Length: 535
Image (tube, rainbow, N blue to C red; front, side, top):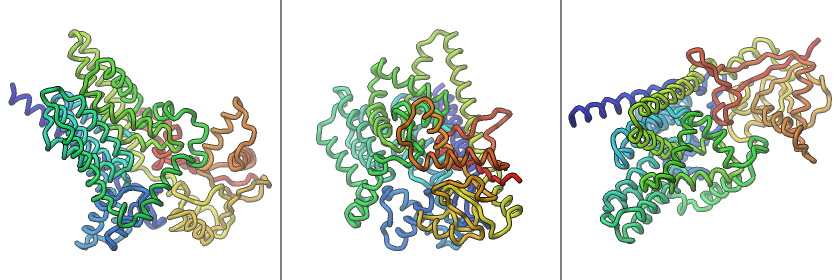
């Protein structure tokens, strides 16, 4: 029986890891530079690539909006790619950075299994790793060269060592747990909150495993040392570090334009938007249920995980910037808690109840997997921006005036190879050099001033949403850009014919609404409208 159980465990883990690889590497070349655009369609990847290039040349990144650990890993990948003569093309450099993120996404699944084994047992571990394996947002953002998914590796590992602190109280558990908390912070600043789980494990430990306070202090010291080693710019480039770090703090306090304006209470929004779409409805409900169940059952191991998960949830919920990806550090905790709850309730149920409970779990996993595969398919279908660019080149003469609402960015068709690349100043310069006369309309007066308009849902949807809200809750002084966009869209729908370019979100005959996805889950599926004045 023990041999059979080990065999089942290994085969299950192998199957989960194979699925994790397939989901995270399928479509990894999405949106990379090609003949029509020299930049990635992800808006932040160029920052990571630029910082990694700086680290290769000088030893220190030129950017500290993010910590440096993932940037250094990308720098190693870029160095390997170029040193061995594989390629120095932008496309392959971006791809190398994405491969690092995808590998770390798969690693997070394996480490979550290991952490589940340390907390409870093989069944809980298999369930937890399977949940993270198919988690829609984790799969989707494993395709991007950004810091969010890599942070989940170190969070999952730190939680595993917190279980060892609780179970053994050994020096090794404290020291390595501290190191991993520091590495989490060195990947994504607020992921360092996982150190709270280490504190909880210390105080929740049974008397026989209770360790002295010196071990906890040593863990803190290791966390601080790991953070400094992986982000040495905190001392070596302190001015740049302070600038980048304070920029992110101010950004979180001020908001992100109209994107999250009027989205209400952050605690509710994080659940109904970020987690609802990021985990999928079924897993999101189970996650909330597992939190309640952990508090009700007073399971100390589950409470150790909550010691990190609840403060982190509160931190991202009070922010005025509420990207779905900010919830990713919660995903290993969510997977562990849901896996534990599913197993614990199953044990306590009678035979018929067990069948129903297991059936519910299978249905949720199957539906979530369908949704995840549908998101993955967006990476392999022709991108709306590329299709819109082809239509423009075939139907709008070079030099024609095209009215636009905002400076072209990642959500715009590539009017030239560089119109969507870089900072606002870079994009404004490229806009003026495009082969079309791109007319920005900050103030809109003439309803039929141009034959052509090109608009993205990223430019219009937030203003239209706020306008709908204002019908029931009038706003005394609405922002000018909101009113301007609403007026433009109203007239375009009245006086212009429209060509729509979008990507369907469906799999096996099941369809999902793409435009209801959170802002950063639509990167692969913007909607582009090209309007032509009616004759």
